[in-house]
Length: 414
Image 1 (cartoon, rainbow, N blue to C red):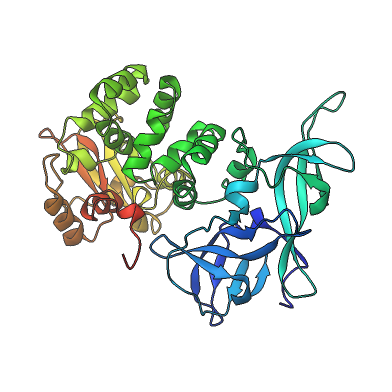
Image 2: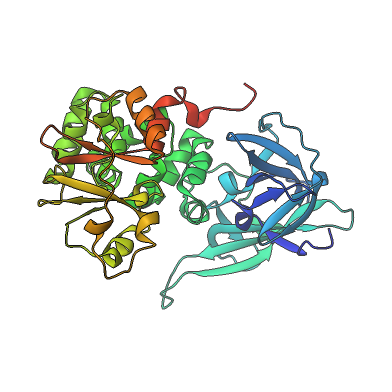
């Protein structure tokens, strides 16, 4: 492993792409598997948990890893695609060891595990060699401090801790895409999942919830206090929030809708008034909407918003006042590809595509799919009988309903 650093920190491996020797991506690193024994000075690292396409998690032995660097992991390509099942003698470094409360023997200092480093021994085996321990602020010191100490200088790494926090595990998920973070959270034990959920901020948790299977969404929301659950629903896209609330017991759903902000609750209630498998039930009520006098420059600035998905950013909807759904009359849609060819100072209204029909909120899944395919679109406007824009149905909304139930948790080969 000549290209591998002499010391690798486990949490920094999370989410890294895994490639075979030909350069094809196999999957992404999810965790590091070790065997902890109290009579061994440095525990052996036995392999990596790798998520391959289809969200199946497999085991990649360290003997199959040929290189690791800050941007990738390379394997021999010969990996067993059987689903990973953790043995009772094995411990997951990221999921289980981060945030454990420990004590440094040589100094008596106490803190929590921030990260764990592994190195290659003379035997070519990988072992856990260092622990990054974060001490909390105390005395005149206002900030916490992190020290990297020898593995065998730390007490508390072998014990199961029911009150273990999740601050550092949550931090390790911060740079992952919501779908990837959701995959990690889905595979945690219920107790550990609860700890991570408590450590995530509302916006991040909302985005992760949108990517979890329905049963996980309901379980997590039901274990939160009502005020926080309502705040998280407000952070979710209205269509995802409506789907989640519809899966809750009626009494819980009613209570959370009452606790939500009036405007957010109104949008959710409006979506819930339509059938779940209709354009109205699938649509997002917050597309990019502009008045007729908006310029191309304004439109391009709006679609640069980081929170927009690619499908929502593909179309701009030009409407008369009011510009919140349900809007005034929809005058037409402008394709971003077309706007990129127009002078920035020109009006969006001069680049409208008025040659397509619009969907009604009662349109079926088949109608929506046919519409998107006919016009080669990734999103489509939904209007009422007066021609007012109610929202937009994106192709990802459609796929959520066309794919088999529980598709987010579906494993290849099952």
